[in-house]
Length: 304
Ligand code: 13P
Ligand code: SF4
Image (cartoon, rainbow, N blue to C red; front, side, top):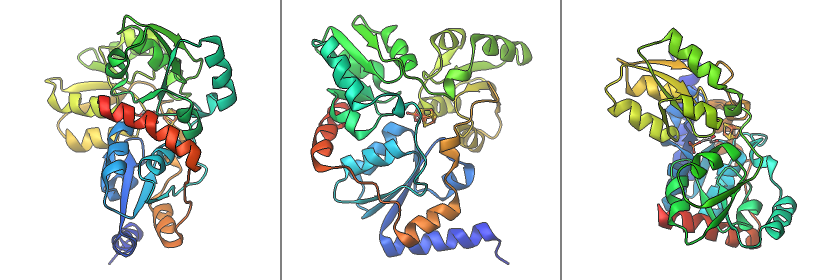
C-alpha cells in the first residue's frame, strides 16, 4: 500500500531521471521537501552545488533570489522555482535605483551585498557574501569603507568583527528581526542548562545576548560537534528538522515562536512534482545583469 507522499516520491525519482534534474533545498524548507532533496544546505553551499552540478535542470526549493543565483552561476542549466511567489522581503528592501543613489553618496565605498538580494542588485555590487563568509570576505577586501547591503543586522555583525568602516543599508529579515534580547533572557530562564545559538540576521542585541551566532550550516555543524545536550535555536524553525535528524539524543528549543518564514514554507513535495512535470517556473536572468552579478558572486566564491 502506497500513501500519497510515497507516490509523489516515486514520481520525483522518475522525473529526476527523465529531466536529468537535481533538487536543492534550503535548510528552512519544510521537512518533507528536505527529505526528497539531493542537497540540503545554506545559501552558500547551495550556490556552490548549483555552480558545479552536471545536471541539466536545477529545482531550487527555496526563494526567488536563490534560484536567480543558481541561474547566474549555471547559465546553461534550466533553473526551476516550484513556487513562483516565494520571495524574500529583505531582498525587496533594496532596489537598483536606490542602490545607485546610495553609491553616489559614498563614491569610495566598496559595495558588499548579501546574497539575499536580486540579481540586478548583485550586478550593481562589487562582491557578494553569505552569512557563513561575510566576515572573512569583508576582511579580505583591500578597502577602508564598505557599503553593506541590504541586511543591517548581518552588517552590524560584520562591523563588530572588522576594522573597516561599514555603512549599513537599512534592510532586515522580517522573521529574524522579530526576536528581542528579552526573548533570549526568557529562554535561558526556561532552559538554564541550554546554550543559545542564533543566526546573524538577528538584531545585534540578540547576537550579544546569545552564546554563539552562525549561519544555518554553521549552527548544524556546531550542534553536531559541541558537548552541549540542550540548544536554544534562534533561526527559522525549518532548521530544527535537520537538527533533530542529525542529533537524535539532543534537545532543541526554538528561541521565538515567530521564527517562521512564510515564503520558505510555500514549497511542497506536490509542487516539486508539478515543477518537474511542467518545467515551471523557469527563472532566468537577463544577459547583461547576469554577467555583472556573476562577477560579484564569483569574487565571493574565490575568497571562500
Ligand atoms: P543561510 O544561513 O543559509 O545563508 O540563510 C539565511 C537565510 O535567511 C536564507 O534566506
Ligand atoms: Fe528572506 Fe528572512 Fe525568509 Fe530568509 S528567512 S528568505 S532572509 S525573509
